[in-house]
Image (tube, rainbow, N blue to C red; front, side, top):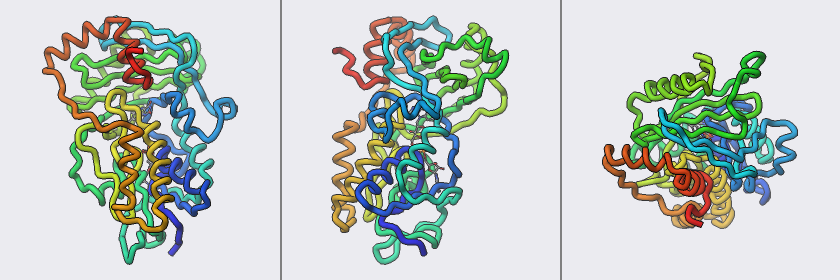
Length: 365
Ligand SMILES: Cc1cc2nc3c(=O)[nH]c(=O)nc-3n(C[C@H](O)[C@H](O)[C@H](O)COP(=O)(O)OP(=O)(O)OC[C@H]3O[C@@H](n4cnc5c(N)ncnc54)[C@H](O)[C@@H]3O)c2cc1C
């Protein structure tokens, strides 16, 4: 049996942030991930300035070896509609590739890592957690994303917060396709579904193009994605993307009644705790913030890891991310009408959609 101070299941941004904060304080954190890094993760790869502040390196240093696309403009609208251009005249976000960012973060955490090993057996024996009959520690952090086995153990299927289902493709433009591509780097396109249940995006990062669509309602996702792509192509904004390479994934929004993030000797972080922002679906920031907060709760517990002792983590999460909103939607026909009018308004798209929902700025300032 291999022992550690803390076992972390999952080496995405949440697990890496938690591991890095523990290692910085001299703790022995062991990260176990089913994948071998660099591993890919379905994601548009949009990060906000708050994520940049969480990174263990400066942007210049990161950009030396990885794709980093500054974003200073957006096109926002409705699928099938005209769209509004918004120009901030300076970078207000960045585009990254997840296989690059996540591998870098995991490496920089300084933690011991076991890659390519799926956690399948979790036992608690005499105050110790044991994983796969091979690893043991008094504290366990569930950072395994939407299908995290630790989250399943703590919450079963009792969660009731909304789930986003999404499909996306990221591919490298080469040769003639690169020359012909008219998608503007640094100007992502966000196009909301007519029922406002989700949105599609088209986002160029250097030589890579990322196209996808996510919805709260899983019904007919494939049809919505196909219609979105067909519309982009018909509008002349995109050449048909490759048929192979599309990937699907799901994640929980922080709204309604999210999963319980602590138990005796265990904490959940990132998607495992259902923390993505309910307005935008952004999940990298809350993943990294929750990882760091969980590490702090572990350090402050002073070796006594009862649920009561760890509960400060829940209060810290609420203080950092705000309480989960209790969403009551508008009736569908009203939402459709209101959405059409509001998304055609330059003031609304800039102040409410971008500043308020996506960029964490006070929309009315
Ligand atoms: C299509 C799509 C687009 C998105 N776009 C954005 C975006 O542009 N910006 C943004 O901020 N957020 C975006 N998100 C959300 C974001 O990707 C997630 O919120 C974020 O990845 C959460 O990080 P995490 O560390 O919690 O989990 P993950 O990044 O999912 O990492 C979990 C890790 O756990 C490992 N794991 C899982 N099960 C096991 C197991 N049993 N044993 C061992 N290891 C295991 C996995 O291999 C994985 O490496 C998007 C999500 C989707 C689906």
